[in-house]
Image 1 (cartoon, rainbow, N blue to C red):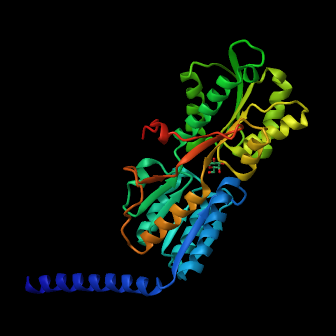
Image 2 (cartoon, protein in one colour):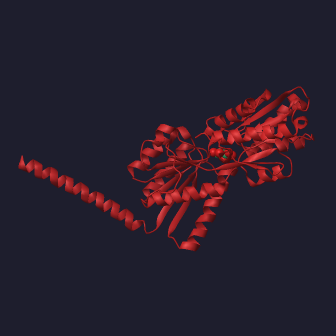
Image 3 (cartoon, rainbow, N blue to C red):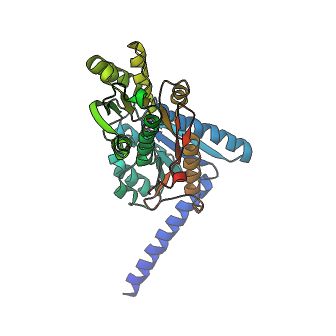
Length: 348
Ligand code: GAL
């Protein structure tokens, strides 16, 4: 019995020694903090904007604080298996924290399992894991914009435009707005929710709508151009409004309209990319929603660094669902800016 108890104690002491050893070696290694950033694909305009900002802020930070951090990027060619392999590689190279822009947001569990086994925290961003997955471990967070808020703001852009220029929107004066809708990836939280709330906001404002058509263009400008061209052939001047889930697809719609040689600018987008904002300024679009890429980058880096260093997360606006939402605002073709929180309309 005594031997057994002593054996148990020895085993426990050995386990503690291994644990201390592990954390010590992690701390020694963490002289240089290693951040691995994993992106779903290379040529997504909005996500690339966030990545460029992360690189820029990281450089500024290095100059200012002389901080010893290393940040590396891996692109997954829209393939979750490739991203999982990239995660394995970063973990085997003792990275201190991972920032993950998932390929498939329903496949977060496997990423979480790997990170947890290696005790490496994860900041997911832009492609939101399902709620239960985020609850699996305390060293997981999500940074993203609120899809409901962006959809609502997009709807309000149209409501305001209609109030100011009813004849420009309801071209045939039948009291109904005939519209088409460009959707992002089918399984992306932003496509489903933005679509729902942009349309619902118009309905709530008492605007009668008729959906002529809609289709998935996967956030991609050329795919949106192809779809819009098809609709222009089919519906011609019946189309009074093009609602797009993002700016790149709105720009694709503008390309189609310009190729078709028609004058049409009743198009709304979301993201506030430089090209999107330029199109709004030059009156080719009614407006867009700016989800600040600078803010995105700052919050991701701050959270990643603090988690890697096991520092407190005070002062970060973390919601109960373990997410940090990036504030956003709309900009319209008259240069007017609108924010929901200032109007007390933010419900979350
Ligand atoms: C959305 C954004 C799209 C695209 C997508 C990628 O939030 O509006 O333009 O970047 O994320 O996940």
